[in-house]
Length: 338
Image 1: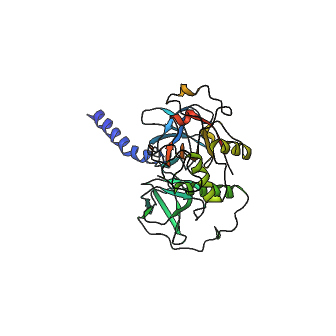
Image 2: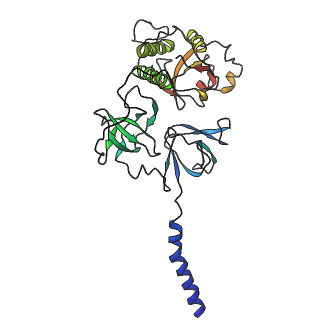
């Protein structure tokens, strides 16, 4: 009886001590995918892509490999690596140093641009997704909030109630030191980024515009692929690109260093494609990036998406995904027209 009592006492003592010891250990962190991103076999962009992680997926964080990569495990138990960039992932739970979710005072009610400055020409970072919790740190003016996302990344978002809903109070405004009133853009990367966003915004306003092969370049009632791209640049920047996709391809090659790997494209780059030969990758093995005839062009949006138009049946101007589809197999090369 004495031994049993001691054993039971020891068990109770361990039970009493265990929670206190465990309390110091951080709960497992999860990685929430906010935009489609490569799931790779190693922490390098040159490693093999196992698949594309989709927006909304949650994975278990195994380690923070370095400043650029997380080692994660997906729902099926597969282990791999994903970019740590906030435009692709949110880090949630486990005593994250940001604490943005716990201290949030707003929720995103519809996808909206997250920008580096309070202006529609401000550099675009990513789209905040419906359901994301953010912290509004101040109200800049009637049009813009300064916010911090769940990863601790700061930026600006529209105050329009169709995009964001306040769930708490907003700190009293302070005199902002920063983003000064827009002046002439600099000649550096920010200027190019603003031009890219202007072109994309100009193109997006034509979503749903009917397709017509050989459409008139003198009106916007219908578009074929190159007419649409040409009009977006003309509306946004007053730049008149060549009238057809082949001419636009040559123009881009004269303006920038092009790539034949679509995953290396930057937002706003033009993408050039060969003719459709079916949905199988094997149908395109004989293509020559700079020798095969260009028959289609579109604007790359980032995150594996393209803004384009190619048929009336598809709905005219629209946004499509690239990965694993004939668009990926047909791709010849791409680059910047700026």
